[in-house]
Image (cartoon, rainbow over all chains, first blue to last red; front, side):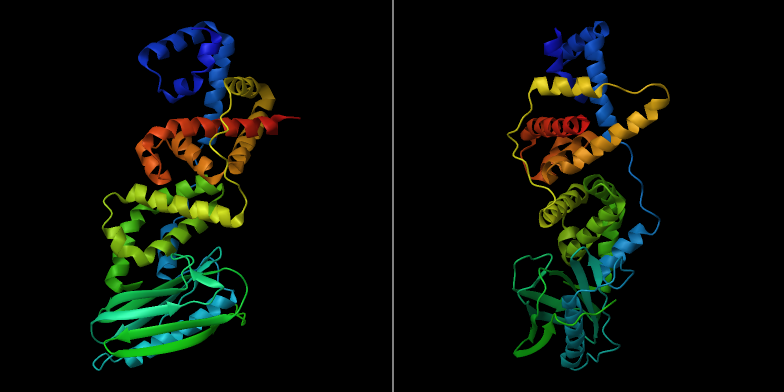
Length: 210
Length: 183
């Protein structure tokens, strides 16, 4: 095998993906060719440099990530965009509303728990409320203003969920992304059986700090 | 999106064992710890409402990697920091040869550390300039050493195309490094 043939095989040689015969032929050539041997070392060198270990996260990493998902914990960044402030207010209203609206025997207990968490331009708002009894087939519909979307459903302006509410605490997590500065209205509709309730909240325009 | 307390615990139970692995992958892709943590957090935000779906995934590890990869690509596109390169710009053997000749100096004596640091910086900087999909492929194959089938699942491509894609990505990376080595 000559130098040109070896050079075309250096990647595969370093990947250990050459067949036994080719591999042996390359190895034999490298034994007697300093130039090609240096090239193989160069190939391995850049790969090794690329693969140097990355730092491990600190011990609180897992907890931070899980709390962020739950929305009520230690936010890495506090929310600052107007949309989240307004959406948060909307969710508070929603929580109170749901608590009052749910059928008898589901006396709401405690205020809704709302926690915003930011990740780049995505910020999660959580609604939590207590339901006194389990409810089947509750439909929740959200209509979002043009300048905001749910991170998990980009481009969707109107989203509906069919949900079952369990007795006790239920949570609604809204990962909201602000697409551009603006104002609008967040509309939420909650339907159970023949009853439908609608509430609206202004989104945008009021800057709040975390 | 409604999660009961028990569902929230189920979410934690499912994803917690994979968080550090996700962080390492994110760190390789983004190039720095802060962005990596942001990316993992974004994945968590996205997955939390999908706990039921998570429960039904047979092998969570590659599935989670795929979600993180997609978040990374989406984020990169939003930031418009990188532009995807076509996979057609395959470098020639001559280019590869030229690269290996230039990169073969390993530094001796007191300059060795400085030369190695410079080379390391150049390589990571070059990796950062690759398109997100190219970068991810190099990270998964050359850095993390994942099986081709797992990589194909993350990238949503046929496993048989991984090696040829990889050659093109490496050629592109070498091209960028060479440009950085120019005086």
